[in-house]
Image (cartoon, rainbow, N blue to C red):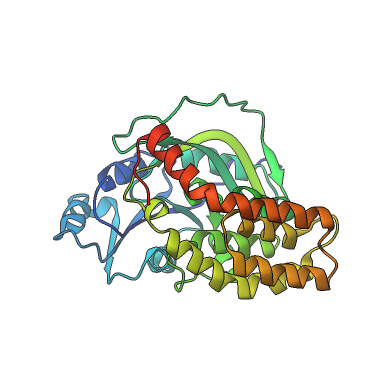
Amino acid sequence: MKNETFAPLVSIVIPVYNGANYMREAIDSALAQTYKNKEIIVVNDGSSDNGQTERIAKEYGDKIRYICKENGGVSTALNTGIKNMKGEYFSWLSHDDVYMPDKIEKQVKALSKLEDKTTLVCCNYVHIDKDSNLIGSMPNVELEDVKLLSWEQMLLDLFRSGPVNGCALLIKKTVFDEVGLFDESLRFYQDGFMWYKIFMAKYAVLSIPDICVKGRIHGKQLTQTGQSLFRKDCEAMSYIMIPQLSNVSTAEHNFLMAYIKYNAKYGNANIVKTACTQAKKTELISIKDSAVINLLSVYAIIRPAIRRIYYTVGRGINTV
């Protein structure tokens, strides 16, 4: 039943971990939210910018809560924000991204119509470049296209399409009480591992089509420069994920096979080998699956070159 009085305190956490570029735009977009029952927490993760991050943050006075800590990575900054938040719901805003003014309002309104208030809410997003220009065209949005997605659907999609954009989510704080905080040993894929833990804990996601976030793409962000960290994190997570996925996989929902194909596509050969051995033991792999895995492994060899061309030619961004 719709609850018109549902207006929880929402904590917008902005981790700043590689300088103050774009930070002011992010903070301004958080302050401009039409949803009023909010707090804004800026966490300076030891940015090495001669104090620029701190100077900008302190210009906002008591409009934001500012926390400065030693550099420890994105996970530590997010965890610091979660530990210090007073709100009932958590909303992540990367310091180089931007919220649309009604991001939080639309997500809270959508959640108010659900009985289960622990359901995550995910909005749509677009990409902008280093100068805040829209990349590509604004997609058409059918506002009635709201979907309640099961944890099974989300887990399969995590391996088929990659991690959900964390800035597009609204998450009840009690979810972290159950699944734990972001893994601080991971320096690249901490978000993907968090979503994995949440979906494995069987939380559903309400997907709303509204475009509420502008995600910035530029050459200095970790997603463009940290491919070696990505592989290292994938290897570390595999020791946990392979046995867990094997235990919950069935013929209908073969999570382990989706995980194997994901790692094959990205050239994580050791993970593919170990996971395939487990899949054979539990009869979760077919001859057709093996053929697809081999094709994806070949694709993984040429994928870096395709990726460089895509970003350099299509988006004007130099990658490594």
